[in-house]
Amino acid sequence: MAGINKIAVFGACSTIAYETLKLFAKDGAAFYLCDRDEDELKRLSGDLSVRGAGDVGYSVFNALDERSISEAVENILSKHPDLDGLFIAYGTLPDQKRCETDIREMNKAFTINFTSTASILTQMADHFVKQKHGTIAVISSVAGDRGRESNYVYGSVKSALTAFTSGLRQRLCKAGVHVLTIKPGMVDTPMTADFKKGILFSQPDVIGKGIYNAILKKKNIVYLPWFWRWIMFIIRNIPERIFKKITL
Image (cartoon, rainbow, N blue to C red; front, side):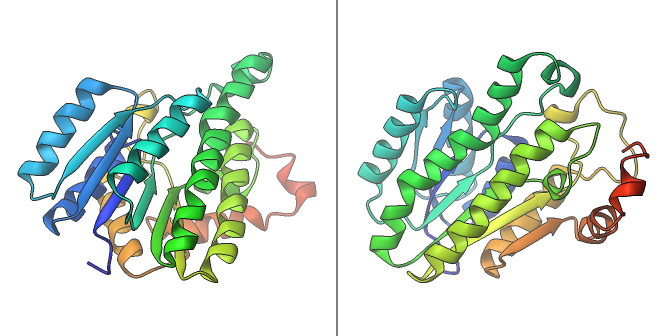
């Protein structure tokens, strides 16, 4: 399984994470699951075990609590000192209109979607550097490719996360550690439950399979599904004088 046998997962109970982990469970991977809902963690642990996973442990963590994050990291490395995989798959979709007038809501969006993830990556990077191998996969978003009126707060945090993982990838590759940045487009998940679904929406199992394959192939950046690479290429290259006058 491309040398990935023990995987820590933050945001393990997310729909996309679940679809990805099902595939690794078939390969017999061991997991350490982190999320905020203990009941869901227990259910997921049993589900993955039935699907063929090796040892499955878990910790409850809160992305808004730095101490909670640190404790989860300590628990992971205590349980698996030879951990060779890290998958970060959580996030929230903030209310753009509310963020435009509520500073606390905007700051919360940055803390959950960027600061907490950067904290996890920073705390765990040294483990992978010392080990001199391993794979880190982080879900960002196509929204980070260009700020747009409809979701520029979310886009900004994902842009920051993409830049962070880019720098981390350059740093860790020298130690033999691979970093994958995952950029899904619109996905039919609980996070987008209130959205009208169009032809560009994908199902979580499609994204999960794409992530699984990208990890095994050691890709650096993957757009999922593939066509989002070209959609965002077009959006990124609209001249600013035109872009600011249109609605996206």
